[in-house]
Amino acid sequence: MIFDPFIMATPAAVWEDSARWSSVPRRTRDWLAGFTRIVVFSAHPDDETLGVGGLLVQAGELGIDISVIVATSDREERVVELTSALSRLGTTIDLTVLGLTDGGLKHEADLLRDGIELALAARRSDTMLVLAPWPGDRHGDHRTLGREVAAACAVHGDTLMLYPVWLWQWGSPDDLPWARVSEVELSASARARKRVALSAFASQLHTSANPEGVLTSAFVERAVHGREVLFEPEESVIGDHFEALHQVSADPWSVRTRWYERRKRLLTSAVLPKEQYARGFEIGCSNGEMSALLAERCEALVCVDSAPTAVALASERTAAASNVVVQRMRIPEEWPEGSFDLVVVSEVVYYLAADQWAETVDRILGSLAEGGHVVLCHWTGHADDFAQSGWDAHAAFAKRAGLRVLVQHQDEGFLLEVFG
Image (cartoon, rainbow, N blue to C red):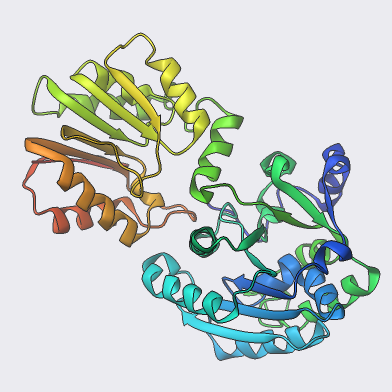
């Protein structure tokens, strides 16, 4: 999905009017006082102030040690602005800038991961709170940083909360993961300091004198007067995004109704070199439409997805096929046992960072039976939440796998390849 930073999908008043806020838990100063250290990860200079600036003001008032870790810094000017903004929040804040590429964190996941690990290791304690961008925020850098911080915190048992930034611009109340939302209680003085801090980001403020700035006055006003919220992370922040999509709709991408999707499935089935396969494996089955088609070509078929609702939908769709097993599984960390003579990866690799895809390729090769086939099919367009493009994913597979290309079909909107 791509959103326009100058178009607010939901006015601030509509956000505030949602009746669901009455049941949302509140994070008070007493809750905050239970921590002696806060480590805030920010994808870009200003994300932390927009998302949790009021919380940081109140943490400083309580004497809590605060560290801000900024992943990217495309211009020195923005770091200077951030330093000024943090000082305006009213406390001494330890700042670390990792210096990675703005808009390119998905290509530098290994460097980012090292930076996260070092930052947390140097500050870790039993009373530490870690804050990171919500991966569902529809910005590729937010997604990558939030995912990697969540993974690091899960390993060490760190307390983690996620904060949105751009949700308020592109989203609506229906996009909030309400079961995991809490609101930070902010004092009037905290909001006032947040406003002053945000004024430090002159290069980002959208004005007649600075039309390149992406922070409109309406967006800044909502950040000052609106709610600061935190989300509790799920076991898998990647799976969380897809779980939300499947809960809202049993067919999130209209694969059952759109001719584009139905035609693509028929083409995928048609290019399979063998009429019948002994054991197939489908990665990212969603609601099971492709699974139902593959079930006709495989004596046994294993289908996996990270979202529980997707697993339930695919299980229902293939209920009449006794040769199909649908499982919840997070690839590449988890992998089914046994070998396969057909592996199908369709419309999922966009959401894997380069190193995750490399590990997935290795696991595919490790479980591919002699004479087996691997099918890749991906859209060749662009979306802000992609970790890599379809083109890049296919090229990376070809280079790493070293398999022969048996079929290559380049359509107007997608690329379909069979390797063996």
